[in-house]
Length: 181
Image (cartoon, rainbow, N blue to C red; front, side, top):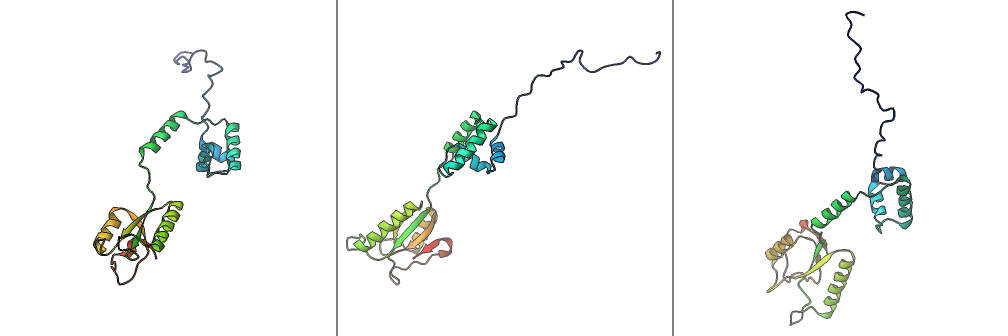
């Protein structure tokens, strides 16, 4: 036909009828979580063998991960280890054990209050707290220095132990702390 342009094809000549296979999508923690019915953070902990996840749950999640073909990404594993090492370790919350009474003439606590201190120290450690013994009174902390010490040392709570009213009283803003007597 005159006046018509020849038929133009933009397709490559003789296209391959079998395109190359696409790389399969990587199975992620979220895929394992969806298939197992657990949250992805639970799946992550389980696959790392974390003791907070029951053994039965860890085995179930591991079986689902194996079935799906999940493999830990070595790049992310290295990044995760780097990040956990580069962040400062968290300190145990600190509690002040404040006393103003029960001292012997040599300045040490008598046996009764020593037992109270040792018990509080042991129980605090068991619960993940760090205790610091602070004394108020003559030649010790006054209200200002005690409050300054509590603030500067990030102390979250105060135990008023062996504390006799009227003897070296402490006037600070107690609303900033959890208090036990």
